[in-house]
View 1 (cartoon, rainbow, N blue to C red):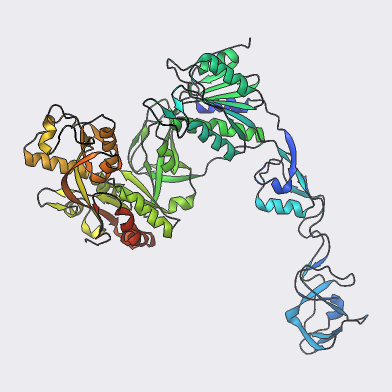
View 2 (cartoon, rainbow, N blue to C red; view 1 turned 90 degrees about the vertical axis):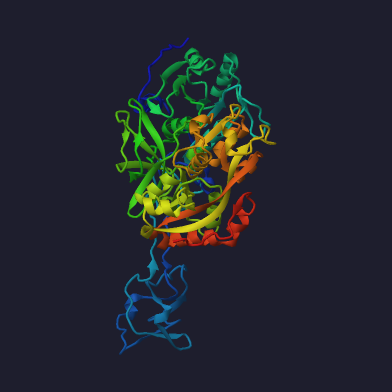
Length: 636
């Protein structure tokens, strides 16, 4: 039985050294047609088989001549050339045609003057080999064309064919088995029961492998049973170069992966000092690398990028290319835990002359944050975090053009912003909205600090009964912004279908049988609730669940839909989206507050056009509780 040893957690670099750099790999070679070689990696250098061009050819339309016959030509003394003459002769020639054996130059047709049948005049001399593509001008036979380890691009395909190659030696794509584990997993599209989890991690991992140049083989989900897992591992090792096991890598009651790997071979690493991604396993079984990915999708993606990607490149004979980096400014303080290198997902935007990096939610199970992320901010293990305004290095997950086209919208959550982005991108696909749902007050503070392009706001001023403008003037100053009306929205109490507890007014929130879920401090909805409570003489402590907070209308609606709460305050559209009941309380104004310089920019005007478009009104009309008849009105 192979020697089994257990190693404590390792740093990421130690894991890379043990798992990737020490994996014995011999690049296997296969020959394929050049026309099928796009994206493949050359396993040997390629030398030109023929010269390009392989004959002397005309580079211009004109006439072929002997340069020495033209030396006397000038405006005052033109030289005549004849088609059939043995001396001072010429021949008409088109671009690409072979040069006659007697000629050594081409004169452009624009510089040729016809003077009779088969006779022309020229008024300036030609130099030897002018406008002629000489043999080997592009490539000389036998000279190096492409090096080993080169990933073939479209123009490489052209160069290979031009240089006489029909087939090329490439590295065989590594075959990688992907085995998801977990008794709770069900296939996409299966009707879901409580406790079921849609199995998508193996699909995500297989997509990564295809992108990096490997051939994934995705296995069916294996239940949490040691015998079933061992059988799946044995099957995966047969006919594959590497194996990826997903989930079961931690220390829970049903986490058997590390135990099975110890029994089958050598566990190199169990636990990596990174977050997310700590419960990862690196092993070697039958001289093949086996990677145990954590079950949380963000953890799985980060570990795959850091360990599986360089392993695939090693099989292909490539060095992994580092992700492009940019320097940005942290939009707010980002605390971090000592002892773990943290990968913080961030959105990026260019505001004024600064590139701002705003952190996204950090849960390891939040796959949507990877969809929204523009890059990773890596905080070292010996750091407690990043201060607001500090310069940071960010690894890009999108192109720089995408970052430049990002419009940051910070503040209150609103369902119409998704439709607004769709309308904007139909006319301007280079632009996108990156929305941070932090509440109206936080949005205005970010605007005042120059950390966003637009703030979404629906703040009621209890003293005047007006929406938004008093708080904008107090926090930002009207001369620095342009306030654009977006919608009038219906706010109210979100309740279970049929309103089984007959919740009708704010006063019902103090009933002991009513469980409430609130919005976070600074949210316009929270401000409205506190105003209504004060008017009704209700103390917040009287409400069961007042201190429980969520960050969006859909989040509080989901709490009611799942039975975690009986009531929430939010939008009618959120209640309607989840089939819930709704008790109306207030019609409020939701506005977009633009930085004045951004409003004047092309991107700002494109966004305003989208707000004012008939298409936007048409889409929002499908949402309940919205009035966008005045969308796009300038309020200041």
